[in-house]
Structures are given as structure tokens and as C-alpha cells.
Image (tube, rainbow, N blue to C red):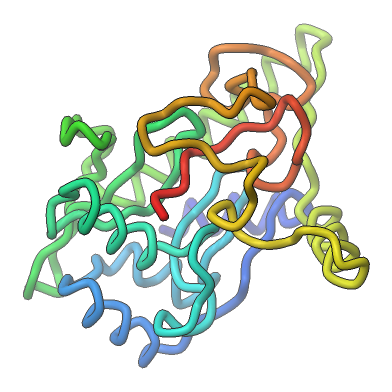
Length: 236
């Protein structure tokens, strides 16, 4: 995970995280999920909690898994809802979103704290395929791919468009004080899509799927409520 932490450190301006989570809250999340979380994933939660970097959302724990809001960044809420409503296997924990339907799920052990399971791309049809041998490799590969794509866009003269995390944090604060919407995807009727993967009519561009190139290509799908925004559907 050190390579991942180095990238996060180098791109703090393009990141937003809720902050460190104490061990007792991680243990509580494990009890709620019925899984032991791999050491690599635990280390990220312990240090950062949950959030995004380079517009890649990393689901985890916000503050307390018993009281965290449903929706954005909440690995426990996504996982339990998908298990209940869409037969997500009980040893899968949702750790990432694609922006176009499927979810990134981490394979966990029920009892072995040293188990480092693979990361799979899972959809609600209960189809899945392995994308990385463990959480550390999954996150490092996604970050490297995003940086490589941004570099190619820059060399080609196109917009890089990585939304600064600090600016997004300021936006959230402004939305809070102004009374405008600042909640989770599950609470936002304009941003919500059906679990079947149907896009809302207003969201006609898959900005994070790699299927199109536009100024929102690298913008966080969660923060920009524009017609070029997109996100994975909330399971709630």
C-alpha cells in the first residue's frame, strides 16, 4: 500500500478523504459485514477512512458504521443493501464504483485476518470477473491508469480536467451553508440511477467509463451535478 499512499500524498490537491478511522470502528464494520477485512484495505481505512483521489472513489467508513449516512463512500451501506436486494455474495465487500453500472468488490474471509482476497468487477446479474489479485494492486492500477490517461490527454492538447479535492470540499461547505443539496447519491433524485444501470435522462455521458472524452472525463462523478456527470447507481 505504500505506493498507493505515495500517489495520494503527491496529489493531495486532487483528493478528498474523511480522515483516519479508529480500530474499534473498523472492527465494528467487520462485525456488521460478517467479514474480516484484508490488511491492505484496513490500512487505507485506518489512515483515510473513505473518499476519492483523482476522481476515483474509494468506499470505506465515514465516521461510525452504525450511524454513517447511506450512499456516497459508505462501503457498509452499499454492501449490505446489495446483499439484501441483489444477492451480492456474502464474502464480497463493495470498495469502488465504476460510473456505469457494475461495482468493484473485494473478496473477504469470514475468519482469517491475513487473507488478501482478489478484487472483482461484479454486476447485479451476479456475474463477476477478477480485475486484481488484491486490494493494493487494484487501487494502484486504477490510479496509475488514471494518471497515464491524463498525461496522454495533456500531450494531445486535450483538457485534463482533474477536479481539485479541496475545491470540492469548499463546494460541499457552501452547499451546506446555502441549504442546497449536499447529500448522498441515494438522496439526490437528479443524480440517482436505477440499479438496472439505466441512466437518468439528464446524465447522458459516461464520463468515468472511458467511453467518451470531454471536459468532465476526469472530474469526480459524485461532485459535479452537471449534464456530463455520471456515477454508479446507488443500491439504496
